Length: 448
Image (cartoon, one colour):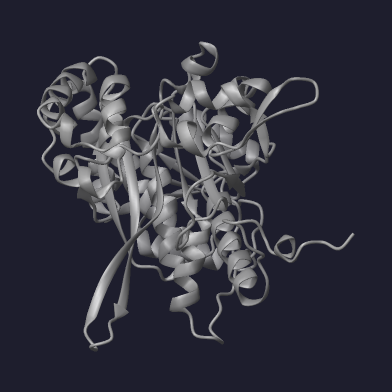
C-alpha cells in the first residue's frame, strides 16, 4: 500500500534538524554544557515519558500545560503516561529515587534534551522542543538563583546574544495570601471582560490570570496588584539578596511585577531572559523585537507536593529552538563558534562570609576566561572544611577570599603542598597562577 503524501512530512509542530541549523544547535549545546560543567553541574538524562500524575500534581491543574498542552496516553497495561512537558519535575523525582539526598548538598544537575507540548507552533516554538535545563537542589540561599542566572548570562554572552533580565518575587505560603486576596478583588471588577480561560482561572487559581497571553486581558494585567507590594520581610530580604548578587556581578535587570512564570511550583524568585533582536523594516528604520529565550526561579515547595519531602531548590531552562533561530539570523553564513576543552581542577577557590561569596561568582568568571582549572564550594563557610576538600581533590593551589580581601580586591594564594601563602591583587594572582599552571587547560568546576 502506498503511503499518503502528507505522511512523508513531519507532524505539525516538529521538524528535522539538518545542515547548518543542526551545526549551530550542537555548538549552542556544547557551549551551554561546557559552562554548566565548569560551574559545577553534572549531567542527568531523564525518560521522555513519565507518570501523568507527576505533572498534574506539581505544575497545577489550571496551568496551560496541564489543561491544554500535555501529550497523555494509556499503555496496554492501563498506566497513564505523559510525554515530559518540562525538566524540573523529572529531575526532582530522580533526586529522591536515586537517594541524592545522601550526597553532599547542594546537588547541581543539568539536562539537555527534547520536551513536548501541544501548543500553536510559531517562531521558535514547536510541539517537540529542545531545552537546556540547570537545577540546584538542596540550597535555600539566594546564591542558588544567582548561580543559575549567572550561568545563563554567560552562555548568552558567549553566544553573542543581547539579552535583558527580568526579575520578580512571588513570596511564599505565608505572604502570598494577602496578595491573592487583592488580586481577586481587582479582577472581580473586570470579570465580564476577561477571556473564557481567565474567567475559569479566576475561580480556580487567580495567580494564573497574570500568565494569560490573550490580547483582551493584557490591559487588566498591566494594572493588577503586584506581589512586591505584599511580600513578607523574610521573602523581601531573600529577594534583596538576589538583587545584591546581580549588582555585584554587574548583571543588569528590570523588576517585572507581573512575571509569574507558567507553573504553580514557583516560590519567591522568578526570572526571565529576553533576547533583544534588532531588525530592519521595509522603510529602512530599525526596530527591536523581544523574544523570551530562558526562564526559571525558586521552587521550595515542589518536593512536598511530589512526595511530602523538604527540598529547597532553584533552576531554569534555556529554549534551544529560540536561541538557534536567533543565531541563524545573526550569524554570517561562514561565521561559527569554536568551543573549548575541559580537564580536572588544580585550584580550589575558598570564600569566607557573605561579601566573599558575592565576590567569588565574579572571580570565577575571570578564572574561567583565564582557563585556570578550578573547584569550589559556595555552600560552605568553614576555612578548615574547605581546605580539607581542597586536599581531598588533590589541587595544587588554593585561592582564599575573606571579608578583608573582598573589600580591598585582593586574594590569598596558598601552595597546598608547602602551606606557604601570599596576598596579591586579584589580577596579579591570576597571572601568577597562569604561570604556575601553564600546561593546564579549562576544566569542569565542581561545587561540592
